[in-house]
Image (cartoon, rainbow, N blue to C red; front, side):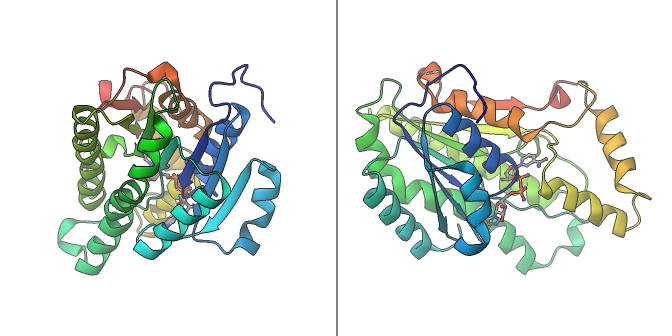
Amino acid sequence: MADFGSSRLQGRVAFISGGLRGIGHACAARFLAEGAMVVLSDLDSAEDAAETMAALGDGASYLQADVTREQDWQRALDHVTQRHGALHVLVNNAGIDLTGPVESIALADWRRIMSINVDGVFLGTRVFVPLLAQSGLAVKGGASIINVSSIMGITGYSEVSAYNASKGAVRMFTKGIAVEFAKKQMPIRANSVHPGFVETPLLNAGFQRWVDKGFAEKTEDLVAAMNSATPIGRLARPEEIAAPIAFLASDDASYMTGSELIVDGGWTAQ
Ligand SMILES: NC(=O)c1ccc[n+]([C@@H]2O[C@H](COP(=O)([O-])OP(=O)(O)OC[C@H]3O[C@@H](n4cnc5c(N)ncnc54)[C@H](O)[C@@H]3O)[C@@H](O)[C@H]2O)c1
């Protein structure tokens, strides 16, 4: 396991939705390395997830759960309560993308992205708030909710309107709950994270779809275009998003709530 020279999350329990791949998986590895115990959820069966989970080790457990289903979130609460009796960190990470001209977006596809990217964040927050509030009392910086939005929740992008809308909703939902918890003196901080372009299965699949639609000859051309549009000159690695998420999860971010942490290699700074 990687050594980050820190045990900031020692003894803490974290739940990460969409944790088997990409940014969620990198968060799980980072949290474990910093001393936390993690519960991951995703769509895969427990059998299909077994190899990934075994590689993460004993500190991690898995629950097959769809973020759009209320009953799955209830099972998530039961799993966390029975296994750990506490929850200090909730990362609402599961998400999908959707691209295309606005006039071509089917209502069913619009509703699907909203149900995963927005309803999923709401449902996860709602079910865990009482346990987070209770567990947060024992933690210096309070419990921490981290909602994964995107730079697309801050700036508009052509043919990304549905994803823009979903991630903008995540950004504002986070500010709403942050103020609500703080005003009620509940020991829960809530912040959103806004990654730029990150090398994950989601981005790779999106690039492939653009190639299939004829917008580029090959995915390498799209990677090169994103690299040159990003001041830092390259895509992010998932670990580079997990590190700021671990910071928000820790007491180092004890005065941060309602903020939006942009992790985009300078993309929105231009
Ligand atoms: N990759 C990027 O460039 C990028 C940039 C900005 C924001 N994001 C956001 O980061 C988050 C993670 O993205 P990623 O790139 O790691 O994606 P990914 O597709 O690599 O991983 C997402 C995981 O979520 C799971 N998932 C999807 N729908 C689900 C559902 N209904 N219930 C439970 N799990 C579900 C998937 O199975 C997958 O394992 C998403 O919210 C995404 O919008 C990604």
